Image (cartoon, rainbow, N blue to C red):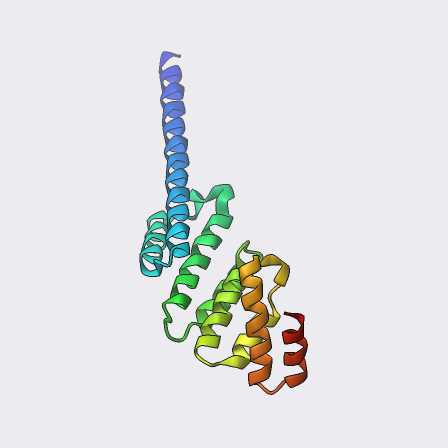
Length: 172
């Protein structure tokens, strides 16, 4: 009987320590996510990307995210935004993969706008226009909304859709 009690107590302690370490790890990753986002917002793209990629590599185990699975989508989205800002080559495949895996990500429209910026900077106006057209403009902040409007109008202009371009530019 005593042996069973000791065994039950031992298993309870092991379970508690395991849950506690998982909770602590999730808090660490949330902290790293916030740090990475802060670095991205400060224009430190390569450092932000390094922190976010390291964080995702360390997790390895999908279970660490638990009910914070949206955080993983956000981390991967910011990694993609860092790559866009750093003008990595041939990013369309990574963008498509992200949008396929995380179509309802809280930053999906930001990632699309990052992709549109990337194509716009590379003078690929058809691709930029396709992405811009898929963005919900209400999801953008005021500064991003003005940039969205300008790039939308300019893309229409560059691909020969002059009436649409005029319409957009008049609304600005």
